Length: 116
Image (cartoon, rainbow, N blue to C red; front, side):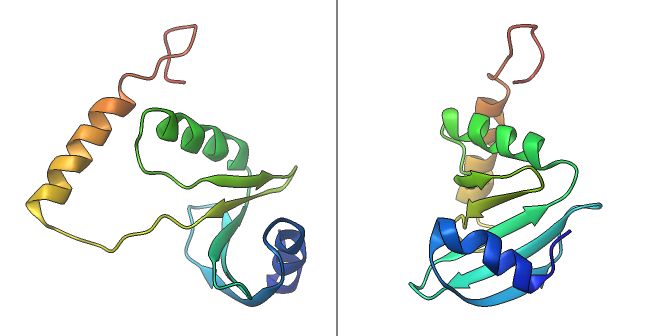
């Protein structure tokens, strides 16, 4: 798994120069970095055994208009994704939209009848 310097080096060809890197909490077994580019964008680099599945899940979610990170690059050991804008909220409208998104996710089925 990469260290912060390696994360910046992996991301730079995709997002441009990286100004700062922070380690953030990720799923068990994955390592996640928040990268701040010199252009003012925030992206994430994730490394771990589930990155290919995560990239596929994000793409499938976006295909039914569920907010999910846009995948910028997938390597053999990492993925780079855009930040999803927003802030934590308990607003009823947000909760309602969450339910609608979940319903849209349930419309995704693969050729074998399983999800994705």
